[in-house]
Length: 366
Image (cartoon, rainbow, N blue to C red; front, side, top):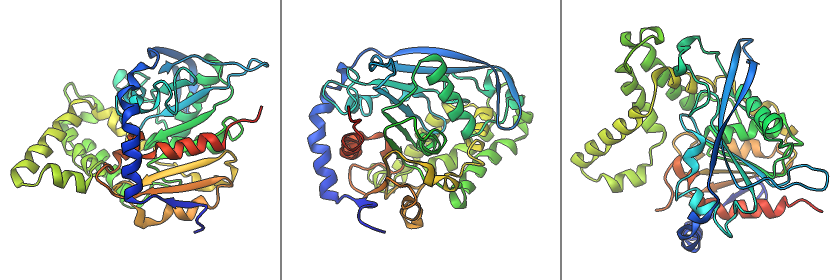
């Protein structure tokens, strides 16, 4: 792997990045008020051939679109969430507070930030709305295509300054890159790999799905209360988002570890629906950007962390595949006191400098 394709910053480098970014985090609350709304698509046809008479897409915007002389939006940034998440989840002090404030990398006075709730998530259409297991079996292509229609048909955005996402949203970023290659200036997938989901990753997803479906109280999706199998499904989910170094420090005794675990089980299970969870984890079943990587023409920086239990670096997949992306680079963040496993994707204090480089590299020429 050439140095131009794979980059890794030292632990000292990561510490420096965190220290210089902290003052920005303290003033990050000054971004414009987020606005939530919905877009309905009539008779949306899924890749499976199923049709939903009305598909609702919920979204949040921050800032205002800026138009060029031809009337095209030039400052739109699409940011996509992970599995079980929602767009508004980015409005935290850690994420929005480090990116969207005055003078920050994605200053919302300068950029038009778009945060979508993907199909099956947040306040967008999902199985738990009433169709339960009769809801169309959506996949990542459906989710991206619906987002494209939201942008182009409803928001009037026909060009994106940046497409980025975390975890599932990172995988959607790869799909955006080859499905609509001329639509964006830059791409940043975080905590993802551009290949079919297989090996341990698929095994954990199947454990989650099977834990629900094997519970008699799930009742084919027609339950009135969340079935106990939902708790069993949370167990592999916890391993997926675990951070061994941080969790050892936070729970150094048996008693603390058990309290720590129970708190996370209750936190995760309390915000989940069993049917929605099945669909959310099954939607990655035919994801495989490796078939299309040469089609991605915009500059792309893919960032993973070495303590990510979903995309462990020893697989060597990102290093192998990034060479096929014409303007692609890979960054592997080493394990430090600042990284948080898979959740490092939501800490711009760590990876922000790479975003800054990408924005500079992809700045449109007037």
